[in-house]
Image (cartoon, rainbow, N blue to C red; front, side):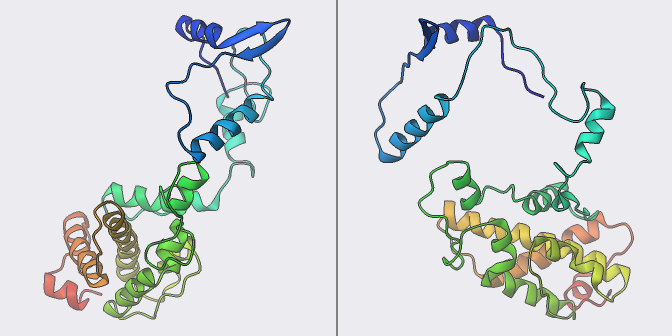
Length: 256
């Protein structure tokens, strides 16, 4: 459902920028400055090409429903959302109850590839020097590669598996990683713990990535592993109403 603004101010701006001569429309630009780089020139050219196919009319703006059904209502909206057109299995994500909402929201966005990775920014026409992941610099930086395909992340998952006395994690994508706890032949307590630790691990890897880009800080994998244990213990003990443990029990996984 789309609608264009119809305020008097917007109408005045439109009249100043869109001129009609002999029934044809032309644009009267008023740029703050001319393009100063090759990227800006290319973006301006692409912009002109997009506008070349735009046709304006004298009709007033109005609401238009393009989804399922002939009109916009709750029933048609629900039908449209549940169609294959907008369904996405990546959006089906089980939140971990003993983690803060910021971690769950972060992991949900990662599953949908909605994190501001270099590859995502590049697709949005935001200039980046390169789109390579700094952990390995051999593949494009996507959320999936950061958390499942890089050596940095694989070392973390192996460390967590050894710590929890579990088999090594073998995952192909983010969906495998965030649902691996379901296929483990362990008790519910262990599954709940692993589910949270995986999310904390991804959240901490992302922080290490940001520290490298914005603060020029190289975070060692040992620091990430220690932080996963520390954050995990803090949140598990204070936000989990079912199981409590001491720091020694947590470090030795004696509560599992």
